[in-house]
Length: 600
Image 1 (spheres, rainbow, N blue to C red):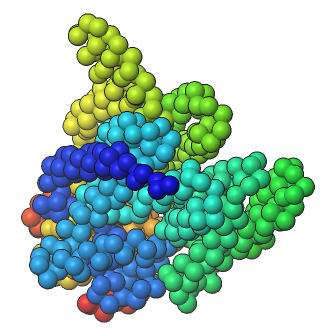
Image 2 (cartoon, one colour; image 1 turned 135 degrees about the vertical axis):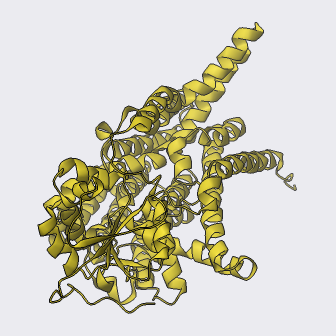
Image 3 (cartoon, one colour; image 1 turned 30 degrees about the horizontal axis):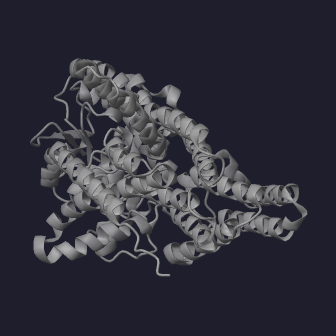
């Protein structure tokens, strides 16, 4: 008997919901970002640096070489992966014949983030449909629009790797919530391998997803998903390491994929294989094999790279750790954030946990309850990670949407049963507000913070609106500039100049030289600045790092320059805009720390 064709109408409705929600969100984000796009200006230094990395690669820099050769005399190591450069580079090359190189670059920086937003919406909707059906899946698209931490990672000009981490985590979770086959396991492994290659900071959520998948398999005792996942993760990580690092693939590292991390994944895969071999002896034997895999994974790292246990920032000079790393709030725990940021980060994840827990309780025992249980475990881990590292909140928000959508359906159902029009409308609005409490709680706090910022501390110079004012430095003859860390990426992407350092932790000595000079007394700072071979010292008054330098060292070089004091070895240079420039007057006998790189 011939099977009737499947009903494609629900799928079409979901596709239309995703496309409609994405188009609306894209238009809103484009309107909000119009000013930055027109300049263009990358609000986060990492976005400007990412554009520079792609630009240098397309200009001939090796695929395997991600160093920034316009910093520190050409010797400025980076730990980034080329994987994230691929969609940006492809879009730039495609649009160059039509728009020219400069406009193609800006267009790529707008198009690629919006496409990652589309992928996020589609994946979240698909996961929600798999768990709760069509109606919650359609509402999930709307809830994504309420998730400010999530939209913040996929807005125009946000071209760094964070949105891709979210996409890859969602791909893995979607596969995990499907049938436990070798294909779904391989999909999980491949997605997590790419996630770890893009950035090792994805290790906690990758470990959570892989751990839940393995434990679920050990509990069930059937399916081929966990073995396929473990070996695909190990082998794909090794292949991606070779494909992206080339000759440097064997170098040890704590901040990027390296032989020790890959060997650790191999140890975990061996443990899963042992668990498969003893599977016939029952659940306890399977869990024993899985535990052995975890011990092997941890032991490999302990033996091969014990220094990594202290974290990638342990080797930073104390001054850089205190005046740079501790000030990067997105990498700090929740309790160090302002109330508005904390509320935005955990509001939706908390609601998502409530919704997922309720859905699990109402689900009939079997496959659906198991899926909700797995998602709950991953959500809990994602929220814990976000509490420890704020920038992980975007992934936690994405994973919270399915539970929130199912809860929203229930709340809207109750609202519709209210007969009186006024209370029914209020209940409907209240349901949407309850689903996104972070935005509701943080709104008055955001307004009050903006008002406080508008008053600000007393300044002696006209403040820069942002680091984009560094573009005015293009009027100077090509030179090496001694600039604050946070300003440097904007300087490099908008001018032909070289600089000394920026906020990338592998270059602790160069970073310390910059920070030290700005907070040191002028006589001490002179030796630091002239040793770099810098032709000019530049800074943007009012920006975060120089404001910090002024506050911690009121008699330091920057505080005195900002007050208008004259320093005998710095000659003021008049330039349009608020950015301040001084020519460095070096003693005739002074030699730079490194030879200036050849001008490109």
